[in-house]
Figure (cartoon, one colour):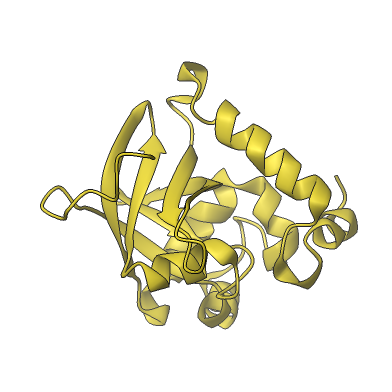
Length: 165
């Protein structure tokens, strides 16, 4: 898929009709056992307006043994706004395991190494970011302020999101 086509499918920073269907398919595929060793994951978060649980396919970027999520579409992405409204509380299905998590925003100055790893494990994000995994840290610093990055923390002590997830 070309970079221009990929950006067109997410016109205005939101997935179009085709990509919404594609994302639903990905949320099913990303739960399959054959993807347990990959970066593919499903994030479940409560919708800020509807209150319903919303599932989104995401890629997990591990840096120094710590899992991170990045929004290729920036701070206006629906899942980012939902996570912010939920106080960072979400559920993550990754590597065959589903658990409640707390997503903590990573300071802008700490984002470049995470972005590099993210671009390595999420090639579909490269057209949106405009960089690849071989980009210099200086170039990654230039885009770091427009790409939300979250550290995935265990939320075992937090109350569960609900039984309908």
